[in-house]
Length: 216
Image (cartoon, rainbow, N blue to C red; front, side, top):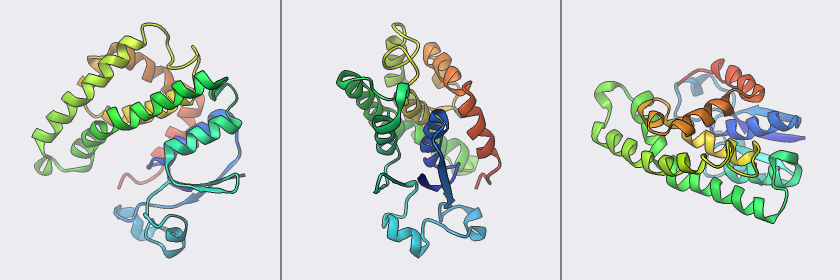
């Protein structure tokens, strides 16, 4: 049994999505980020002493799997995919390399900018936004997505001509940019690819669960 410490409105969603795609049983221990308003009603937060023994950084997710305690959501997904991922995992060393490449690309080339779009447009009130930083983030995220758009000319999926963990990992970092729809309008293949990712039954299931949680 895989134990996921976190909540749907967090990076734990990436791990939950992969488990749902693979039909892997998991136990979700609800842990809420301490900075959220809903934390005051939560049994466990990222500042709870018991949670801090699992991750002294005070961040979610934490996943217990294969005798490991892992704390980085994308690394967790790569481990699950390599050990029990079936067709969502790598078939050989070449695919493993490409899946890792796309995952690290998403983490380094996209997420630093897409997360700023999310923060500025959804987590801050209009009068609190840094509009210059928002405009810069939109411009910066367009560059890597333009490259990805070109890559998607060759295949509808990122690795092996099929949906894999690479698509989950990259879709999750691009999702943060959705509050600025103009980002994907400039990358139509990426927009279609993301729509295909979000049309999957596993995504629809977890998205519905995510909607049940408080936004703040």
